[in-house]
Structures are given as structure tokens and as C-alpha cells.
Image (cartoon, rainbow, N blue to C red; front, side, top):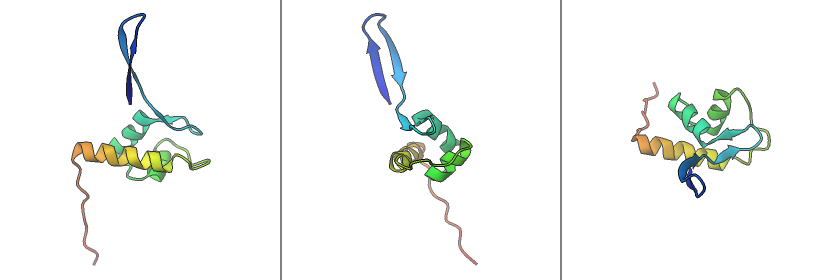
Length: 82
């Protein structure tokens, strides 16, 4: 995310980075999917009702997922196998 200062109006705008160009998913869209339970790039795509096209966004999407979970202090829950 970047913050841009517009010199003409002196207003600040928050510009969200596009993560998936093919499916038009920005950083906020990835974070929204994580808040809804997505924990992988595939789950983010499913949350938005789509699938990967070229797949070049997987790494960036994974980084946003990790950053979002880290900022929340979320710990992974381990479940013992029977």
C-alpha cells in the first residue's frame, strides 16, 4: 500500500497495489479474503469466485496473506491426527 499526496488538492489518497492483474484483485481484496478465512492463494481466488489464469501473482498473494496473518498475531492451530 502506498500513500500519495496530491499537490493540487493537498488530499491524501491510499493507493492499493494490484496483486492479480488477470482477475483484478488488489491488496484489499486479498486481505478481505484472509479475514474471511482464506489461507492460501488458491483460497483467495476461490473467495473471489475465480481461478488462476497465469499464476504470476501467487508469490505476491502469499506475501500479503502472511503479512495479514502476522499483523493479526494469528497462530496456526495444530490438530493431532488420530
